[in-house]
Length: 230
Image (tube, rainbow, N blue to C red; front, top):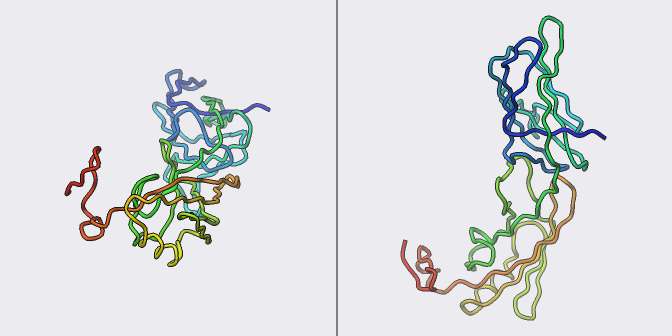
């Protein structure tokens, strides 16, 4: 199956203007994430509208996930599992339709996200007052048109294991973290999904923050482990 995608800059010509320029970009440069919404932005130079797009992927729309219209020349593209996606841009003038651009993207799987504990980076220190887990893209760029969702989690502290659903940790887990000694390891595993419907297991660990952080939370350790004030 023919698949079409878009690069940063496309210099195209049509029957009406040999120096027409179409600029197509997306936050991921020359690739799209398969089975999730991708934002595409289109710019024109020396070319009159109207125009229309054709895409061999599953869906292309000018509305966001809430049904709101996007700004002019902004589109949401939902690629399939094919290796590539082609987007064609046509110019219509005087009842004639001319293909002015055909842009190709590679379709790649959505990467796994990183797990964060409160405001703490993966494998960093945690405060016992922090109660919320969340997932965030660890890769650049971050596409704002999809999100990761935590289905359930497991927390292992020593030989004990705790479990729950959603983003909030239970009060029992918080109490156990509070009892830990400084630098004690806290293992966390979450089961999550995203718009691509793929189920993921994310595993990482954090460490119990020093007691001094609770009385002076602005203190942070330097590269040598010494605590400094912001």
